[in-house]
Image (cartoon, rainbow, N blue to C red):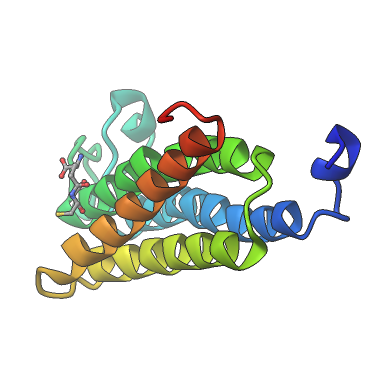
Length: 157
Ligand SMILES: N[C@@H](CCC(=O)N[C@@H](CS)C(=O)NCC(=O)O)C(=O)O
């Protein structure tokens, strides 16, 4: 497949990668909005300049404070960054090796489902090992794409 066709919507693997990649990147970005919501809901701001003009319930200056509900979303966000960025970078290299469509779709779908489940498990929260299973399913899927991309170069042979 020529380079122009590889990175075009005529390539069904690249087309699928755009869709699933967008879902996981936008999900990661949604964590920013959720963090802001939790900060406002719990009046939990961590920088003195943020609270400079804010009042607490007694009318005094609002104190800088962390809140577990905010920190939980931040941990979920960080975990997304740890996993979605490698998926995206390795995914691009994987797509460049022209993998079989059904195999690629399986990887993209398992990763996307695993990350959505990981977030639900983290934010509700669900009892462990739910979150760990979501994490490992996504992690192993990315490793599998990396292995397949490296194998396609003939590196192992
Ligand atoms: N950076 C992660 C590496 C391991 C990992 O991602 N574990 C998963 C499954 S237990 C997780 O959800 N960790 C919680 C987190 O990253 O906040 C950690 O510190 O836990």
